[in-house]
Each structure stands twice: as structure tokens, then as C-alpha cells.
Length: 137
Image (cartoon, rainbow, N blue to C red; front, side):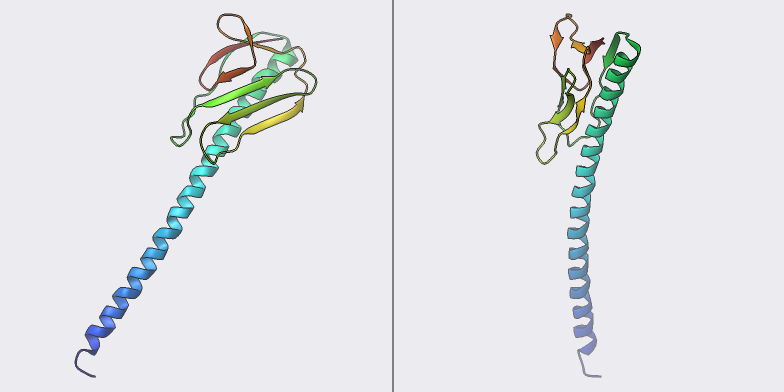
């Protein structure tokens, strides 16, 4: 064995380890970003399903419901907006101002006769997450 051979082998092993861990960190950063995006989309879907269930209950049972939409728990999402368009070809859209997050919606649903009102009793079509509204038949 030549003098200094162990030092050279050790230096090459350390360089290989640094390159490997650098690639691993880059991979986990991308994975973390994908997980945050999926979490944000799932949270919007959960809000959409909750609003859909509330409007469906109002339509099915013909009762007025004072409804508080779920507040967002995801730190990457800003506020969200819920848009309820009544009518035979109605839709419910949950959207956010956060970049890279698409809106979620149910379209072509029968919301005829369903009306959303704010706390003052005025009919509205848009309201925010965490807001209390009254849904009436």
C-alpha cells in the first residue's frame, strides 16, 4: 500500500457521501412540496364536501340550517372562497388565492330552491371559509 492511499480513499468516500446526501435532500424537498400541495387540495375537497352535504340536507329535508363553514387548517393556504350558484344546473366552487392550488367544484347539481343568506338575511352567492351563513330551502 502506498503512503497516502488511505487518505485518498477516505477523501473519495467523504465526497461520495456528500454528493449522495445532497441528492437525498433535494429529493425530500420535492417530496415535501408534493405532500403540501396534496394536503391543500384535500382540505379544499373536504370543505367542498361539507358545503355540499349541508346544501343537500336543506334541499332534502326542507329545513333552514345555520351553517358555519370549516376554517382552513393548512398553513400554506390563504383564505378560501365558496361560491354557490343555485338552480337546476347549479354548482359549488371552493377556491383559494394560494398560488399553485386549483379550485375544487361540484357542477351540474340541482340546487333549485336553495338560497344562502348572510347574517343580515340578504341573499348571497359567495362567502368565506369559517363564515356563518344560513342556508334556506
